[in-house]
Length: 390
Image (cartoon, rainbow, N blue to C red):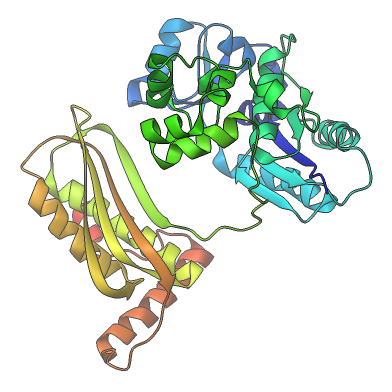
């Protein structure tokens, strides 16, 4: 049976939510993100701002230079999550085969529905517009790869001065024909470095890759060469994945000003270890590898890690390891960013040799988690934090 896959992308989602809150923003160049004098970056920007050169992930200071009249709106992530959930609920009402890949993107497998996929896509687009007042673009194809690229092509081809609100259909057996004239960078899995390597060998379009012998691609790019050969012909048999197991849990902080004070840095690591441990306990999992990420003022970034013999979900253990890693690398340098992560995740289990003290610590942490959830994270503080505030 031919699969019917739809990729949905909410157009300038953060900005669209902000326009619902403040309709006066419509038609104006504005960006959601941090302040330019606080190392803010553009999380999203309106289409009028994009026409003036502003882009997502751009430093806000540069965005303001490109567009002096740019309006900056602080991000409201809780509001975006709530609206995203409303969108995703409508997708799940249509089919249980929904793969959400970000707050504003998802794949749907509608193969079991009797209607033509284009009809389904247009009906879904209208429903989201009518019920939530949001614009979305959709790509329709026989697989995820082509559906996603179809959405990108549809949005790029839109002639509207407002949101694209595009729908791009790629019919069965036309996948390779559709992909052929597109630049190699449009192919999933091809970043700037791979694109440069492909172009150095005379391959500038996806069609150029498709015409290349697979053996040559494997010789040049290893296993990735096989993926390039298949994907360039529009072949992709990956299923819709309705749930994911997290590979890691982490917390990062970018300071408004570079920090050189050891007490401040270690206090930040302590708070991050607490949040990571809390997330682990919430998911009822533990991790065996603790990682430190640190970025100096010159943007040089280091990662260091240590591995335990058994999984943990305890903040004290995570902090103890990450503090050791920090002490090994920090030599009084200024720090721009610092972060704590835990990977090697799996179910927690209680060993027979578990010490009573460890069990008391776990029960204490569980009690603190409940207090945080009920009264807020600042209701209970460590003695070290209280001392720092005095």
